[in-house]
Image 1 (cartoon, rainbow, N blue to C red):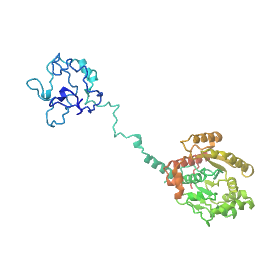
Image 2: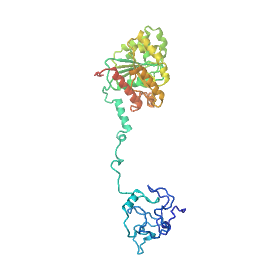
Image 3: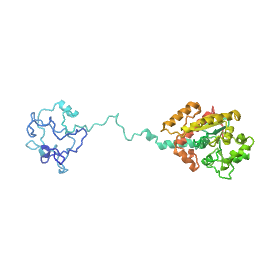
Image 4: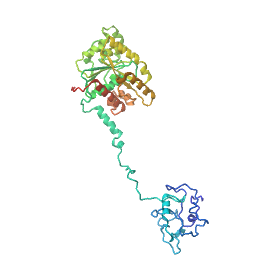
Length: 438
């Protein structure tokens, strides 16, 4: 080997030869050490000696492929392989032409085509005119399913479905008012978020909905962008001073068919003040019954406790919706909640029943979430909704803008999950759709 990267070959090193670089990479060339194979090396080592039969092995590069030129050879110089033969029978640059001789056997031609017997430093013959088979040819302009339905288009379709700009009744309306209490003494399981988003989803699809914020924190009022500062008439006035519910209910801006009874910080003292009030457990039930308007759904957002406010909600409701976070702590206090519901059913409200269980904050990356889901479904059976609410940052961002996730980002996974849950609740509540206009 020479340091200039060329083979130490008499045909290459002589003047005017066609240099071949060791770095030349043709597909199908095996990496060799630069030595000639036994099939092409003359027995005596003399490349200029005559060969028996008059045929010397030559390169198998097709004739229609132009030969590589040397680094100092001009571009318009004639190719050594196509140059005319001089009178001595030798072409320029020392290349010897094919003298007349016997024809090459067909087997030898087949060996060259298949690569058998071809020297290690000689590229195999390539059929440059053959196109790939029709079964394997795929055009880059052929549209795929992802290009037909890109993610942004799918998200836009979901957003239109959830927002329902036409305003038609797309969810079945119940024959009677369904009063649902969203309760769980465990905090942070998604009671307020579930109340707000289910109410908005049902209202957007033709149902008349009332939300009663019974939590002194007033988070449901914040999520619906309803004023609930000190001095605003709220649910406290209804419980303590027997103010009619229609005087404190406010229309939710931007959402048709949705009203909200706000809660202020004054409600924090209602637990103590209700102790001495006559019929303290049924104050909210009488206020809802006396409401002159007709609603399809009444959602009561309960505080994270089992005090008198929660008891008032359980007495006023017909159904209990329990959101359960997919973690162990959410299951730990569930038995106590069920016991309290049974006590209220026995002594105060025999119509009360646990109708709906909703799994929230589901993290599919953990085995714990799957284990909690299986335990809840095995225990409660068909009461558990098929829709599961995943952990989604859009659900947490929406209240900071005074919106529900249904209007904040209707194409998100959180909005889609709550929409499916609302649709499932609506379908479970009626045996057949009721055609009743708002």
